[in-house]
Length: 275
Image (cartoon, rainbow, N blue to C red; front, side, top):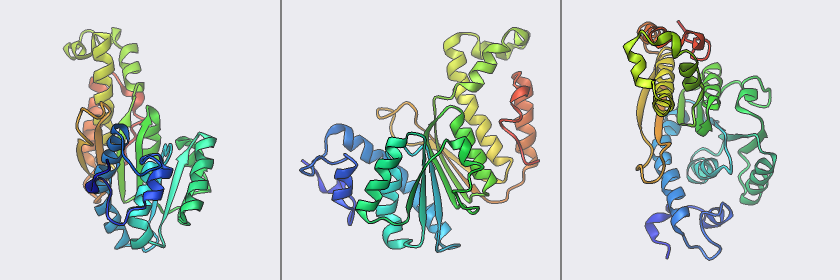
């Protein structure tokens, strides 16, 4: 049975049914309860960022990369944009044409005029003229492997005031660690990733460390935490970056030092710095 605290006051029950978070008779099952908890938890982090952006522009603009079925976008619009930022706009970026078409239809049915869905890869969105120059907030939930880095590049190019990332399936750094393992054997740190399972796990964590240093090297203030409890998802790291025009030199130096120490110099372009 659906309990009242599972649904926010004023939220569209019909929208939740259309998103298959609620059953046709308005009930929640265990899987949908998990999805709803995850999205609500993320909303609690994003809401203050939206409030800050709204203080600067009435027409706030948010881009959601790797939108999938656009659970996040629709719930953000329903809970925030619909009444508090009616001049704002959410852009969902997704490569699967079927999901793009389905989201467009649902936005029309729900009466959400400030939602657009574009059939683009995250990389292609960087140069796309279908998106405005000014973007206030960029989100990327479970954008796999280098798509998260493309979302960061997009956000930096648009000078986004806030970036919200839940990285996923990052394999690129692990592949470079594996490739260069032979020439790094004299470095005792190589023991951290000598075994294949450690290469994968260390590569994944290192990727997020490098991303954080990169964002700090562009003047952002970072909060790194978990999205929800580990019982819900192993891909659980939440990175929130807010542009504060902070000093860039030290994080840039640390980033380059780390790449050199671990034999990852070839990845400097991927984790490029402003200084």
